[in-house]
Structure formats: C-alpha cells, structure tokens
Amino acid sequence: MSQTKTFLLPDLGEGLPDATIVEWLVKPGDTIKLDAPLVSMETAKAVVEVPSPVSGKVLKLAGAAGDIVVTGTMLAEFEIDPSMPQRAEGQDTGHHHGGGHAAPASPPPQPSPASGGGSETPVAEAKRDDAGTVVGAMQSSDAVRSEAAVAVGGVKAMPAVRAMARKLGVDLSRVRATGADGVATMDDVKRAAAEGSTKAGESRPLPNPPPHAGEGDARAAGVGGGAPPPQRTQLSASGKPMRTQPPGVSVSGQPEQLKGVRRNMARVMADAHAKVVPTTLTDDADIHVWAHGNDMTARLVRAICAAAKAVPALNAWFDGDALTRTLHPHVDIGIAVDTDDGLFVPALRNADMLDARGVREAIGRLRAQVESRSIPASELSGYTISLSNFGMFAGRYATPVVVPPCVAIVAAGRARHQITPVIGGFESHKVIPLSLTFDHRACTGGEAARFLRAMLDDLGLPN
Image 1 (cartoon, helix red, strand yellow):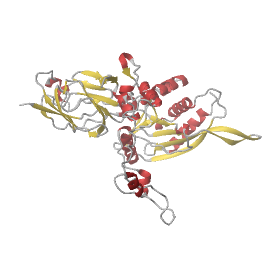
Image 2 (cartoon, one colour):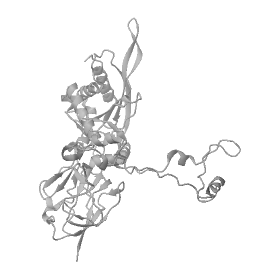
Image 3 (tube, one colour):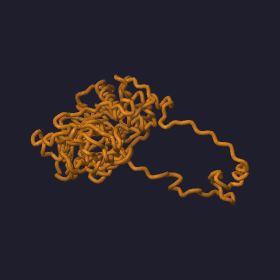
Image 4 (cartoon, helix red, strand yellow):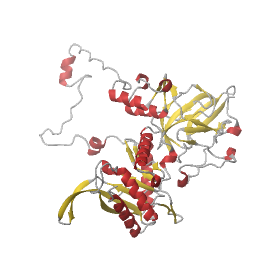
C-alpha cells in the first residue's frame, strides 16, 4: 500500500498567518526529490523558495499562482517513493516526514522584538513543532538551504526575480540573462519590461474574417450573432445626463484581495490603531543657515539621535499589557520605504554611530535590498524609533502611525520657504515641517515637546 504525505505550509520565519503562491515549480503527476524546489511563496517581506519535504510523486497542490494559503494548512500532497532518498525521522523539520497525514502544527512562538526575528533553543530539536523557514532560506535537518536560482522552463532565476517578472508581465523565456551562469537578474527583467518586447502571452490579433453574404445587413440592423455591443453614453434618450452604471461599479471595479506586503501592512496598522494612544506635535525646523552639501535625510537621522540622547523616553519600547518600558542606549531607526507593493520599514542600525556618509550608504543599501526583495527579515524589525520622510513627495504635517513596541515616530514634510521676522525686517527662510507622534501611555507631553525641541536645535546648526 502506497504511503501518502500531506505537507502543511510552515511558518515562513515571520510569524505570519498566510502566504501567497507565486509559482509552482512542479505539477501533479511529477516526481520530485527530497529538498528539490517545490514552490515560490510571497510573504509580507520576501519571496521564498519552499523545498519538497519528501521524495515521491506529487498528488495534489494547494492552489494556483496568486492564491493565499493559510499557515498550517495543506500546501501539497505526495505519494512517497521508498526507493528514493527520504529524510530520517530524527532529522525531521517538524512536519513528520516519516509518513501519514500530519496534524496541523501548533502556532509558533512570537519572536521578541529585540531579536529582530525568531530564536531557537539549540537542544531538543526533534521535539519542536515547526522548524519553519527564514526569509530566503529553508531549514533542512541541521543545515540551512540558501535561496538559489532555479531553472524552470529552461530559464534560471531567483524566486524574487520570477515574482517581479510575473508582476511586470514579462516572459522570462524571452529575457536576455546577464547574470553568472546564465541567471536572469532583476535588472534584466526591469530592462525587458521597459523595452516592452518580452510581454508574457503576447500574440498578434487575428484579422476579422469577411462577412458572409447578408451578414453585413444583419450587423447593421443590430441583430444576429454579429451584433456589436451597446455603446455606453452619459445621456439618456431625452438628452439629460444619467448614470450608466452604479457608482461602485464604474469607480471601484471589482474587489481585490490584499496579498503579501499590503496584506501584512493592513494587519499591522489595525493592530497599532488598537494598541496605541497616539498624540502628535508639529513644528517647523528652520534650516536657513545650512551650509551647502547638507543631506536632508542624514540631518534628520542625526537630529533624531541627538534628541534620543537628550530625551531617552521616546527612544524606547512599551509593553501595554505588562505596563513596562524599555529605554535603549542605542538608536536603531526604522526608515519607511514606499514601494508599489506596499510599505517596508528596514532598520538603520546604530544610527547614533554613523556620520552623514555612513547614513547615506546604509540607507542606499537598505533601499536596494527592499526593491529586490532580498532584505533579511531581521532587518525589518527591532528598531527603536521610526522616521517617515514623506515630504519628498508632498504634504506638510501628518499623524504617522506608531507601531508597537516603539513609542514614537518622526515624520518630515515637504520643505518650503516662509517669511521669517528678523531684526531689522523680514527674510525668506527654508523650513522643514516636522510631526512627532508618540504613545501617550509611555511618554508625557513634556518629554515629547523636549524631544522635538532637541531636534529643532540640531537641525538649526549650519553643519
């Protein structure tokens, strides 16, 4: 009697309740080897490759590309081939690869924010419920399987590159690969999308066949199989304006399920709204005396570090359940990065030890990793305070969201010139609008005001 194995979607190392299928690398009926690539899954932070837990025949897959799979539910079903290599039960990753239908894994423990990710006790490995995965890697027994380029349809590419190609509508088989060993890179896909010559499913439209005898008259009369679709109009028969469809149909279109980054962002924002008591202070930083060459983001980072040193209460974490506060001696700033997929907040570590050049280089590296979806999960958590520089787009003041366990976030609006009174008259000074939102359970209004004052003082210096 053949032995079947139901593989449950593991926690992909981020404590998220689900993930989205990007691309299956097998189909039902295929034979797959142990640890061979099975599927690419998109989480809130990365596209990760999930390997097969067994060797055998693929019987069933959980869904198609774009479908959401809940953590702990069936991802795939296999018929185990005993003649092929299998993982020993003692090397199990927590999904009971020895056979039979596995029971759903218990929820994984939530990682401590201080760690920037999950931690694992080095003993009793066989007793853990789920070894899970981390972004870009899957744990197999005691070894970590790193993300690698996989050849599918004759094209070698990373899972994140395949996801980007799918998003941009690019046919990878028609992309000129410039990476090592013929691997298609993210730049290759973006270049192909810009050129517009490699669109997936692109084909030439078929010419309309000539009408049969008498068919043209039927079309003109609006009857028969060749009748043209009715044309929409904004006017009624009486010539007065009218709605041709309900507003919800013509404006909103069809409901779209949130996935990946936006899905997680919605959860995080709702959780923050429920757990934080936010209050916002606003003011303008006068930067009229800045010397040429000052970098605005670097100066904002420096000002936050100076304010955190002067008023540590806002560079802190707060536990609303236990009513405990943790003040941090270091400053790790979460830098909000806006993307088409949603909001990322990578951590600028040890910002208080970096000079302007170090800040710019570190932020450039983080942005590049966010754009390529290669940033480790540990770099997307564990920051002590946040910065949103939305002014590079538009807007003056805001009420940015404080995400627990942090207690404060600084937002910088669009710089502008304003008339400023000086001795003997008026001058035009350049100012940066600042908004400071803080959790009023963890900070007093006075502490927040002094923090903002310290930022204004630092930003008021020439260099």
